[in-house]
Image 1 (cartoon, one colour):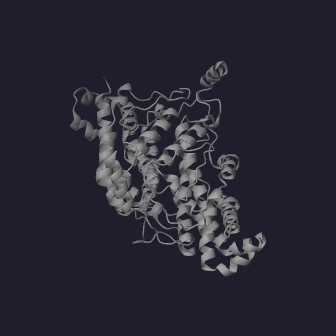
Image 2: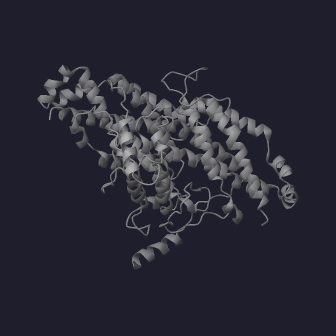
Length: 265
Length: 265
């Protein structure tokens, strides 16, 4: 016990995970890298068909569907292992999660504390299962329900991280030019703020790049092929770009907006 | 309770996940698809640096390292959700895992029952942490230990599935030409069996394709780029091909060999 306490002190003393400050450029680079993670997760979920028993409340001998069981309990494990001490990570579970058992090595306090109150995972969850999932998986059943639920969770986490990363984007944009934002924040002028946060050209480029990425990362690579027009992809590239255009980009901007509106609270 | 029982009966009655029989061609197609999963998992683990506290026995207030804690408990969740009823999946945890809480919808009995006794996850685990991991991650610490352990587990699972898939490969090869294998199996002639299981040209092609895949899937995709020679990749392609050449291919063949030796038990 005493030894463990001393080790903890030592750990805290050597706790140096300070990252470089987020800038608009570094935030953008992170979003670009996250595109690959999201597309990998889309492709990996598409290895399995829909597997509808995964989502059936009455299928298990516990009170939950396999999905709810896997999501809550996997998040509980991750929570104990410290995942949610990182402000980039937000759990989906609606039940409470156990505290971390690892020494708290604080992540840099880049965001305004009000950031913690912004969480649209409920909307993301609904949108994922009602609108996105049916678009890109086959309607069969291969029996791999546990793996299916794990693949759903990985993809949900990647999407949630991208959307809530809007907090970092907004803070970086604000710090680079506070005077441009302050009047509209104080006036709670959503329309002007949304205009300030919108770069149509960048958004169009993101959507195009995501479609290209889904082609590159989802093709069947052979020793001598290059991307063929009209080739077969593991996930339809137009679904990846639609995901960004219709949901990820607007929802990220929504998070940016909500964050800025709380910036002086 | 009664309702739940009736639902279970209904579920079992509608239990039809019979897959098409594995053939040498379909097994090969599965191995090709698994290459992408392994490379995605390599790339996703490389998002994090080494994060050595993940592996430190004394870092948590439980008795385990974060890695051991995350692996055992995530596998326990997956086990309850039925993952290990699929003979393609083998857990790493050395402690016992809880039984499945989902109705048992049996996977097709393609393998000889002795297959269940073949498990080299202990060797894979050792090799992964001592030889592979240090080759492709930066030596820093970014504090994301829970996510690091989860990424390790995903990659370990993908590697283990590939290697143990050798059982399916061996059974398919055997069924396609039992007469070619039977004498050497009965004589326990490992050398001849290994020769029968070895197709040098196919192996060389796999290694080359994996290197190409690591280039394609690990590049920074831009709207107008093609793969550049000497470009920057998320994971060094030569590490992916080395992983296959030095470990995955020989260990898969080892599993094939051990499986065949038990084929008439």
